[in-house]
Image 1 (cartoon, one colour):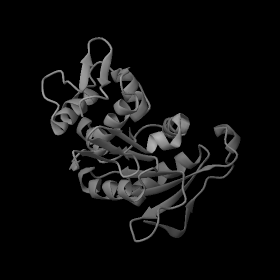
Image 2 (tube, rainbow, N blue to C red; image 1 turned 90 degrees about the vertical axis):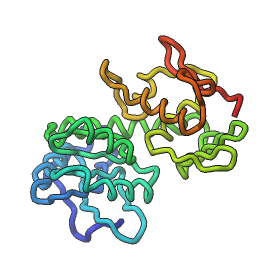
Image 3 (spheres, rainbow, N blue to C red; image 1 turned 90 degrees about the horizontal axis):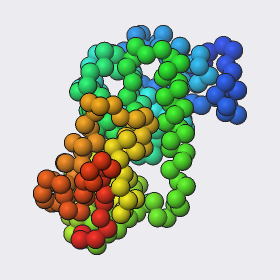
Image 4 (tube, rainbow, N blue to C red; image 1 turned 45 degrees about the vertical axis):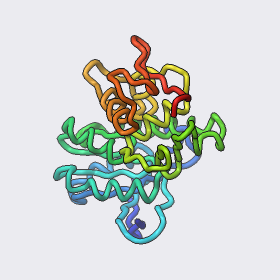
Amino acid sequence: MWLTPAAEISAPGLRPGALDLPAPRRLGLAADDRDLAGPWAEAVAQEGLQLEWVQDGVGPAPDVDALVLHVCHGLALQLPRLRRWREAAPGMPLLVACRALRDLDHVLALEMGADDVVDGGLPAAVVAARLRALWRRLARRPAAGAESRQALRFGGLQLDLQARQARLAGQAVPLTEGEFEVLWLLALHAGEAMSRRELLRCVRGFDDHPGDRSIDNRVYRIRAKLGDGGREGRRIRTVRHRGYVFSPLGW
């Protein structure tokens, strides 16, 4: 992917101090309809952000602080682009703004690698706040030590954070991006119970709500793919009223 030359969107009178940052954060923006996305982009830029149009292409990821995909005409057609972005820039914060956001769109975007998903109709101030929350969340991740966070191994189970890959007994485990994130977090806190709320806060940046079963569904699929049989799991156990515990033994 690469930046389209001379395609920067900037708003007059930017106030970087409003973001508590030394300079405006830069966003790489792509849209399935630039005409419809234009006013939205200008409103976001008014919140103290710089936006630059991004296109898929051959080359390194652009020098931006986050990537944003604005979708007007249905998310399904944009899923290949979303997957390419995640593969090309695995550590880059990635947000999807989708008009008339449906629950299915939310799930698909997260499973394909998005770090957060917002409705395209939300006020620009809310979008900017979500981005700042995403940056804060990612900034806290390296605190536990770089080496221990790049790869984890428990017997025959190996997790590679950079490659976003899990291997069990030498065989690649076909996890989605969302499934890998949950497995990595559980393994990183092996032996400790992590609640659904903690997992959602780490993965998406906000707390759960009573009807949100996405973490439960991911844990169920992770168990199936790792051969962790039984309803409650043996190596990824359900702890009633507390959450899930990853066992470092038995792999």
